[in-house]
Length: 300
Ligand SMILES: C[S@@+](CC[C@H](N)C(=O)[O-])C[C@H]1O[C@@H](n2cnc3c(N)ncnc32)[C@H](O)[C@@H]1O
Image: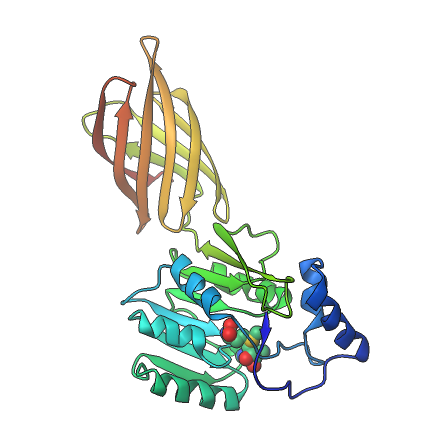
């Protein structure tokens, strides 16, 4: 990570920690160990900027656009918020340091996006996240883990993007890695960008209707965060399911049934909203294919 232009205003935890930063300049250490090396005495995160090309990738991976409401947790000089506002989003930066909030506001004015880029001096843990469609952060692993339960409770489909640091065993939906040789701290010359999309609740049994395709369809979903396992039955027969994926409110899976010795693949794609799934299913036996509508509702 590139250390910001201004000098750190608070001492690091110990001279040993300062040496660890030096070590981070020249070697790639385990992420957790490196992360420790640049926490402040009080366990907060110092101001270190995200390089511009990484900001761009963070906004692109979350597909930030007009209509989005982005919150950057620990907004520093405001670059992520300003980038989001330049893409047409309403963006809010939260930072504990009022001088950074003032600086970020001035930069937003200069960039001509002050109407869409706001900044607030506040502890990020006291911030209401419920209206956000995108959350960005460049913090530390322990901050991410502390935020995790609140992030998982956000509206399904909300995108969460973290620069460099993961969320423990909550697997990201997408990860990219960029070479950032100018970055003197962090992962040693690379930046990672992680994306999570808050998953909808799918767990349980669902009765599906595929008008024009007969039969009684039933799906059973087991779920841990976005990881799903699917069991499917048609007219009481167990079917093979593969390629299942839950991304926010979108579910897809391939269900194969054998009719008169011929395998029929069903590529189900659906959107989960208000306790229902609706979407399209592409039915194919290799020679013929057709697309049908499908819906599903929860079984008690
Ligand atoms: C690593 S910098 C990231 C700055 C900016 N988001 C970027 O990526 O360029 C982390 C920022 O979090 C702020 N911060 C640290 N602890 C915070 C807290 N508890 N609440 C709000 N901001 C905090 C720091 O002041 C710092 O500006």
